[in-house]
Amino acid sequence: MSDENQDSIQSLNKCLAEMPETGPQLSKRKTVALLASAIQQARDKGHTLKQIAQQLQKNGFDISYATLRNALPRQKKARSRPKKPRAAAKTDPQTPIVTSLSGAAARERATTVREVAPVKSPPATPDPSPPVVFPPGASCVFTADGCFIPAPDSDDL
Image (cartoon, rainbow, N blue to C red; front, side, top):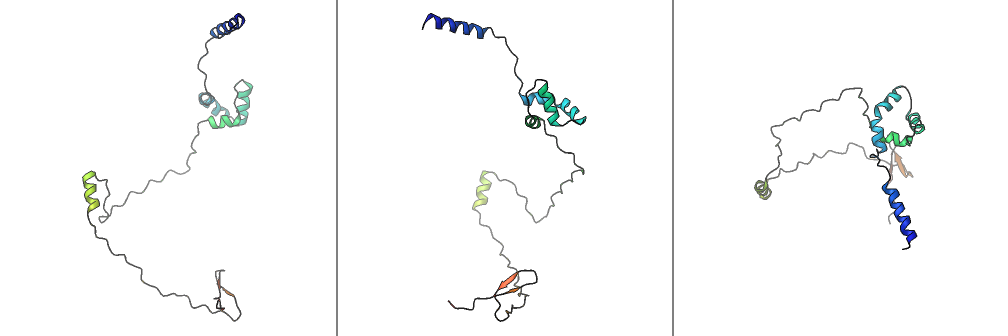
């Protein structure tokens, strides 16, 4: 390296070492959180978030409307009606209470043979609709509910 390069590096090093210390920089989100009460007061006076963002920009805080809107803590809307309490679970003496089983009890339960109740099939109900009669030459019949039933294919393939 030449003496000129070493001198310039030393001067840059000295320049950087002489820079004053700055405090920690606040993020835009943290700054907005600190200003939240003042922002809310401005909104209570009728100012929009766009107007508030413009005012902050005029005074040296570089923030857009979208950033301001997203950085504000979200407030839940007040309910017009109070919440309904949840219904308590009904206890049926025939309904077993399910609990988790520990290791040995779980293995024993998994290996025991259980009887299964037979499935009851619903009773067969006759079809209450009358048979569909197709007029001669008709390809379909329209029903009262606006649907149609196509005529069966008369040609044997």
